[in-house]
Amino acid sequence: MHPHIIRLYEVIETATDIFVVMEYVKSGELFDYIVEKGRLQEDEARNFFQQIISGVEYCHRNMVVHRDLKPENLLLDSKCNVKIADFGLSNIMRDGHFLKTSCGSPNYAAPEVISGKLYAGPEVDVWSCGVILYALLCGTLPFDDENIPNLFKKIKVSGIKLSFSFCPKMFCRSQ
Image 1 (cartoon, one colour):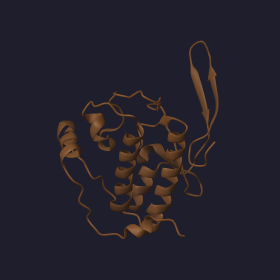
Image 2 (image 1 turned 180 degrees about the horizontal axis):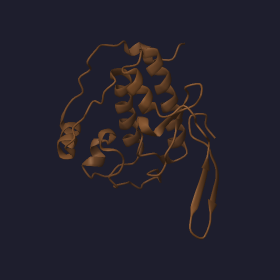
Image 3 (image 1 turned 45 degrees about the horizontal axis):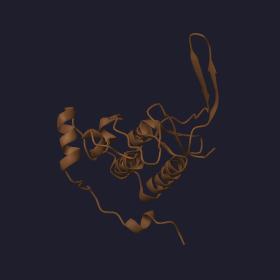
Image 4 (image 1 turned 135 degrees about the vertical axis):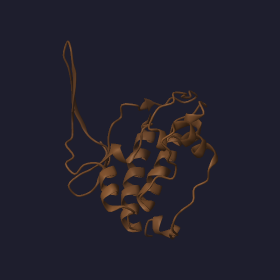
């Protein structure tokens, strides 16, 4: 159990259905929060990002790669704490084995995923976390295009340009 991962209580299987009973998180998606607030202040973005990284690191330590990290899959509890949800595309990592499945949401997909290359797993989650951090700080996505081939070209070739400056030390924990 981790404070920033949605809790699974029970899985009930019948002859025709599978029911998944999970923790109720009442404050909605981080996506809606970003849409409502726009660009977040650095301290608020840092708080969210540290929670996301804490949850992702826990998954990776337990050999789980999420593969679909995005603000729509990051839920907020009543105290605005992040809960990573929707593990439908996740996979178990095994030493010496690589993944190849192209999955996840296009805007958050790592270059190796959209290129069909083999990947270990954590690197694609880390890429998605970087895209999420950009969205938190800028209120927009670093790569966006309605045409998927154009979007993938931007992800593979384009650099990221920040529309403002920030102090990287803001992302370091206090000593």
